[in-house]
Structures are given as C-alpha cells and as structure tokens.
Length: 251
Image 1: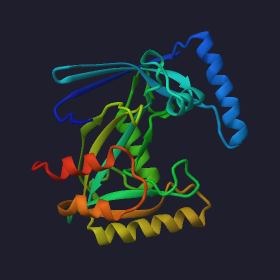
Image 2: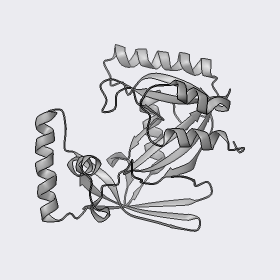
Image 3: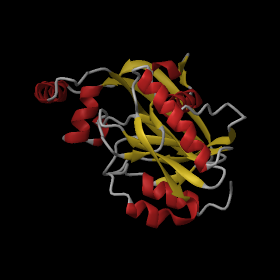
Image 4: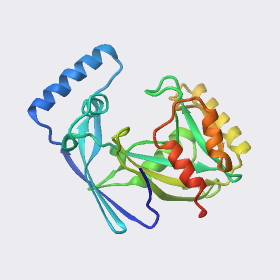
C-alpha cells in the first residue's frame, strides 16, 4: 500500500553488521543459491543493504538498516521466508512529471533482470549512500535519476521542484520498502523525448550500460486508459502510484 509522507521526517540509521539468520536457514539459502547459479551463471552474490527495523510514530519514520547477501534476497523472493528472516531491501524511486503534465516511465532494457517492465527511475541504496552511520536517501535518488535518465535533480535549470512524497511498504507481491520522490521538470514531453534520445545515443556510442531502452509518457489526465493500453509487465506499485498522484491537487 502506498502512503503519502509529505511533511514526515525520515531517519535512516545504518549498522555495519550482517542480518542474523539461523544456521538451518543459511544452509537452505546456500543450496538454493547454488542451484540458481547453475541455471544462471551471470548471478552474483553481492551484498545488499536491507531494513532490519521500521517504525513510524506521528510524523517520524525511523529505519534501521544492516547488510545481507543477494542470495538471501533471491530466496525470500522466490521461495519465501518467515517475517523475522525476511529480506526487505531499501529502494528509492522518482516520479518525474513534464511541464505539460506527462509522467515519465522507463521500459527496462532486454539485458536487465526484468526486460520490458515499466517502472519509474530508481534502484537499491548502496554503499555510496552511507554517510557515517546513516543513509542519505537524497544521494541515492540523485544518483539513480542521473544514471538512468540523465536528469540531475539538483539542476534548477531543468527541475522545477523535487521532494519526498510517498512510501510503498512490503506486501504479498514485493518485499521492498520503496521511498518515492516527486520531480517536476521544466521540460515538455517533446523536449524530454529529444533529451533522452541524445542520452541513449551517448550510452550506446560509449558502450555503457542502458537501464531503460525506451521511455513512455503517460498523460496525467488519462492514467487508467493509457496504462491499460500498454501490454508491458509493470512494477507492482506503478498503477497505484500514478492514480494517487494524478488525483493529488497539490503540485
């Protein structure tokens, strides 16, 4: 379920230690990982930053994060784990809207883990977002938008406003905590199309990783019908996010 967090203070503490998992469970995860690795040799068991504690009181959200491994995340996603051993990764996203009221939605490239899936720019927080004993969520948002669509959220020449606005909590479909910002662009849909074409050409010419093979633009006044026309798989939060935001009278 998506919740509006405007006016809410978010404090994210980082503890540089691994999430505790029972010995028996570790063995099950390792066995599943080895099986998955045999089926897909490109898998890499790197470290992930996950939420060990989430607490909301009034206008304050307090989050504590620790480390775990991708094998833990994969097992929880595909097999499932009891709540106390779940892998709840911390993800950020930014809903971008053009000056003429179109939402900017990315289509994941064929080389990604979810080809052709529609989502907003974003991704997991990582080590570059750790500042002493806390996690800088704005750093993560700025990095992801710059990498995926070449939008610098701090550039006032192209971004009119940028603020945290929503949070999506874990549910039966997704294990992640997703913190979503809203960015209002100074570019029109047409200008953003040309802007991204140039960025896509730059990525291809320099043999750099492409996250979004294509951008889709959803008219804010026609969210339901335009989403229904797109046959692509969609992130679980996407429809709810666009419908809630399109009905929000605030900018």
